[in-house]
Image (cartoon, rainbow, N blue to C red; front, top):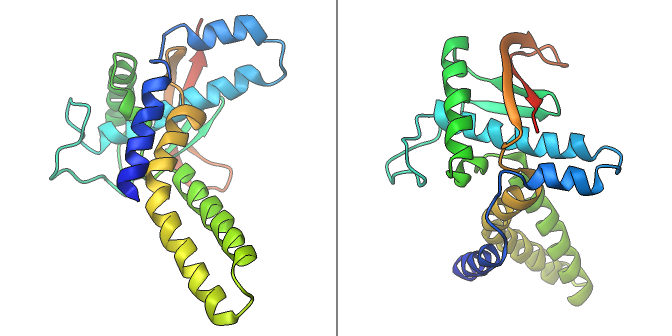
Length: 208
């Protein structure tokens, strides 16, 4: 099942265009009258920069694919907004400044994979939606016998767990993130978020 999803994902990738530096700028020029469009595009680009920064802080070497023995730093996390992103975890301001600038340089220079991260909440949302959808379909198809329904629920959960990683990555790449060609890093500061948690806030601005 996983292999078939990977092949399908590769096929879709071949049909979709390569990121272009002017894509969001042109989109704004064409349909910028839509309320909230700039904010949506901003959040997508910030989201990609957040992921890239976490990759860099986790020690990902200067290559597009992580080596087999490389492990992600699960102590780092982020939250994107239209004005920048919060970064959580044990790291210092100087290191974050270095990482975010390196991340912006690398992701806009062709390392598109830095925009996608396996611990992104998008993957969790996709997994939950898949599980619910498959479970509902099985519930409607199978007899109402409790044992068969329970088995069906297990099949739904197993199927969703196999599909979610690849589909989540695809949704991240083409829906919830966008290469940050229009972003500039303004400031990195120590703050508290809306829930009072300590964090660094990387403030960004839009440039055309």
